[in-house]
Length: 141
Picture 1 (cartoon, rainbow, N blue to C red):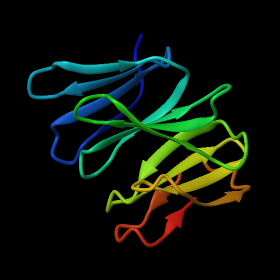
Picture 2: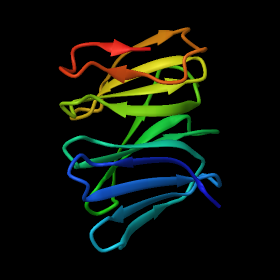
Picture 3: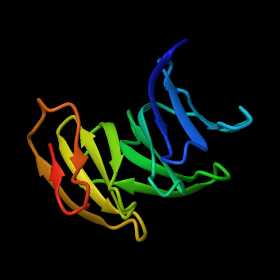
Picture 4: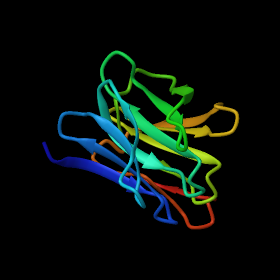
């Protein structure tokens, strides 16, 4: 029961929810229609500011971030970092071009369009979140 994490597109048309049981669901807010349900061990969700992508941080053996098409629920990419960090938070840059993930051992950043891992940094494990600056040029942890 209950929601543990949620994300909404800036236009309010799509909502992603993650329950305490780690189930992720994608919704159309105007109709309440469930677009998709995603299985697996998830720790966090984020919808891109442009409304095109859903990111799900994965725990356990996968230790990656899955990207889904927010309109259809189809998986479009799996982003893997250089280590086995369990990711516990995800955030898109305001321009929707990068994705950062907060991990148990550090943080990672990817180019969303290409899926390329851009960089990682260790430490900052006491921080609970990462955020981009409004102009997408800086990452704060």
